[in-house]
Image (cartoon, rainbow, N blue to C red; front, side, top):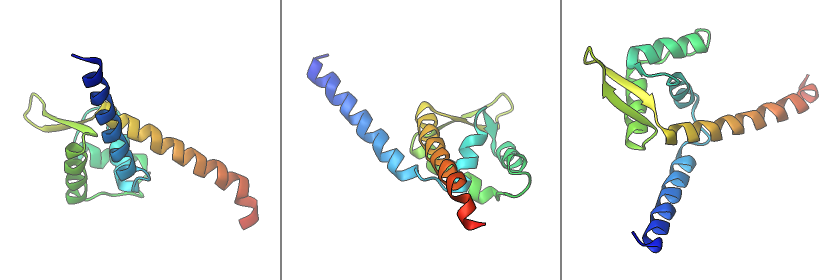
Length: 123
């Protein structure tokens, strides 16, 4: 493969990644928790339960919301979908999904730092 073709491929990958980052960052709380719950492969019900656990019961996602979000994330390349040995559908975060999460976590850290710095002005 020529150097020009290889460079063209890299440019396409970078622009696709940028496009996905712009689409997902900032993330909705629902999308954030769904992707966060995929630190290990889980099926839909497992995601619902894990999100509820992570949020101490504050966030209770409906199955329509979860499956709609997972379908969108799969289409955008943030997750992989496969069937386990019991033929249940299982979801796992992709490398692109991890990159999106790193960007969102960085953004949230900035928000947190600024909130802590300014908190006393609102008390």
